[in-house]
Length: 456
Ligand SMILES: *Cc1c(COP(=O)(O)O)cnc(C)c1O
Image (cartoon, rainbow, N blue to C red; front, side, top):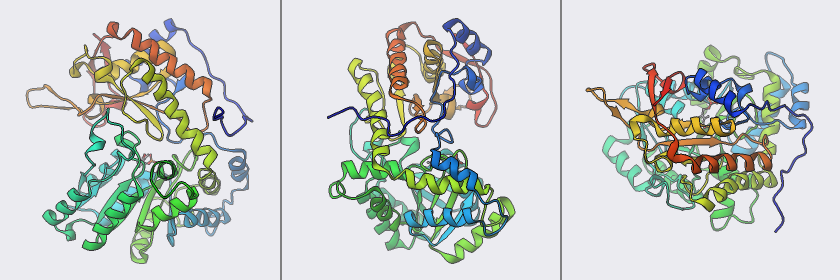
């Protein structure tokens, strides 16, 4: 077997600005030890997110030039619509400026007090939009998905028995939608099997509940199905995606993920009445139905990106490059969520830094160490992001203390990835000298974005 190489050549490059360790110590201190407050220019390898950070192809840039900026009936819209329809088979396709705008519209219409939205795991913006409507979001993840060190093929699956029990408890009339997130972003980028989607669909059908897919990483999920699920090895990614969407009544999508676009999203569905209501709201909040908050050039970039993401050589390289980091970490026993998912590696900071108690934020400390050591920027997904305070002011910690290293699509080469692994291994060697943090400033909502810290 030969090396799996990047299936592209580089036509246009962006410089990386290098900093010294001393400079990074100063920069991190000035940013109050919060990676969100570091200027991107001061980052060597930026693994903060895979959202909107993809490198577009020469075809996409050519599409940007061809974009039709007509207010109504733009050619770019029809190309976008046909691309989405080919994959999803859904007749009603509504562009939005990003994924959460699609969610806002969908849950404003279907949500409200007393309603429940059930999922394998709702992404933060999805949950926030559900809760903002007055409804309740419920995660029913399979048991394997809750064990970080367990290796299993489809740790993103929904617990189907728990779903049926939940429906019987709360009543189908109070559950407007079941939502399957593929891949399961908040659960480590783990995939969902076709068998699981079919089983969830069967339950939804029995009780007359609509099934929606949060489709941000549908292509990565379909690649895992092809590789791991019996019966799919010889099918194309497009055919697998078409089958996946055939079980759904609708979907929401952020084109900033698997469509390689820097901005964009959509809502698609089968129900004409629901589509009509969504479009009414779209006109108030996003724009006319043939552009929905996007420029014609963005629609063009998404249409082309959706075709490119189905290419198997791309997906093989994509999934392999993430697995590759995992193998380097395994060699020295660095703890992380296993197996590696589709878009990121999640370091287990609690196991990495066992000497730092949760109220001293081991994930944030690990982020600081990765930046100091090599200018690598990741994000804490732990008690800084999800922690709450008890009445007596003590911390109610998150279930896990993780550091997510999300890999932007088509941006970094193998030597960049080797460098990231070297930085992690170096930090692992020095782990006993890493110190915890104390919060010196915070806001009541989404504090991780702006909080200030002090090193203990
Ligand atoms: C990114 C994301 C969203 C929200 O999309 P935005 O384009 O960031 O608004 C929703 N669901 C999942 C699973 C995501 O990863």
